[in-house]
Length: 343
Image (cartoon, rainbow, N blue to C red; front, top):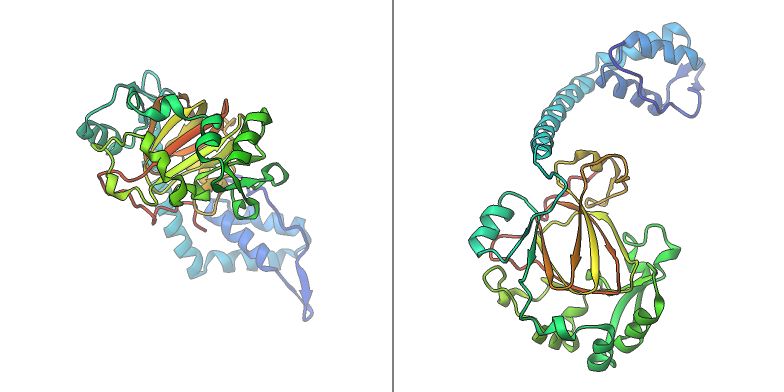
């Protein structure tokens, strides 16, 4: 046996039809998958016999699948997949040679050329300190400030998240309209919870009533195009304990923490193990406790995290938190085709 039989087995016996034994499509898929993985035909025949298929019929079924043109095409695709996996593997191995493979660099604000050439073009996350020292938002923004300045403004939030294990994917089911004052009071009084959150998908900054908040922000125009703010800047506001599950974006992001702290857990696009649990093109159910080379960093008020496109990230609020994220870089930043988790 060159490799082990694939662990999942058919849950029901082959059906009997028209006086002869007919294998279900599930069984045929089981045969094909194991042949592609290098399991010897005689091992598969023995497995079928063990599950009640007569030996002659089992042999015929396995050899029919093995001789099919579809399986030959499958072998070609499997070989291509193995080649691409080796490309990803060498990248992982080289990254692991770093003296601090799990650290995210912390730097003073780089020039635009340095940000783009050293970090964006090499797909390297970096934490930028001192970028926001002249932002009035750093001294002003808080739940109390939002209530005082914008208390009567209607905002959309997500609520009831803790009743849904898949709340991020199902965010449209949790939309709620409230006022900024009521939401700010809720944040201030809640303690630690993941039940409600104002997130990017709520698109509140696309409403003109909240646009005055951007008067408190000094856009780093060397990096970002101020004429493309519409649809490219998002507001995040919520209590301690909010969790954005593991996912990747199809743009690079400049994530600016203005109030409170957030922790990020990051993995590079080349971590193909995450694709096993990928859903909806961009999210993953993978368990990060299984030894993956996670980079972990806490982003405090006044710090900005540059996150390159495709990087997996999980984000948790360590305190009541307000953040802005920008995608309007002065470089092409639309990679909508990047959907490695696509079925």
